[in-house]
Image (cartoon, rainbow, N blue to C red; front, side, top):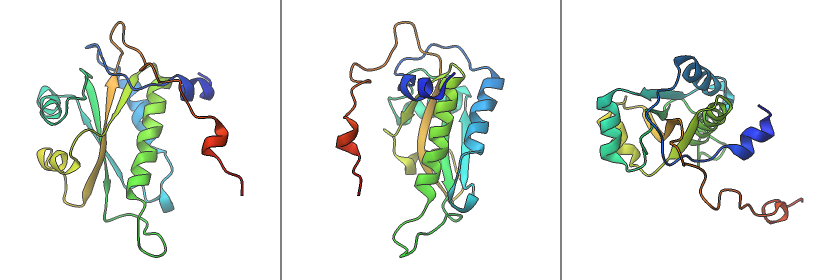
Length: 170
């Protein structure tokens, strides 16, 4: 698939059917996250693949936004292994994990797998419920699966500001 088709066609799926993702597709999606750029190549991301009935039930307890997805990726990062910006006011953890997650959702679409970025969940509660290591911080959940019949992008999906409203040349 052409890259422009991937970035314009991908949408947040809000209704999945029950079909499982082929393990080879999932591996390609995870590989796209593995090769994503991170500050100083620290690769602080950690991806948890949630597919068991127990794990998915926990997700359902914590957010209404699984939408029936048969696979959910919990994207976290090692907060003790991040690049701290000059001045010390921020670090690369959230942005690096975001780049990783974005690579995976675009790779999913390229593989014919639908996705939804889920941030309607308390990261601290996710961390506690999945018993994640103390040094890890949760960024988000990424629903993966196949759109149910009739599912599609929200009505405003293609509505975008013109470039001049979002870009300034200095």
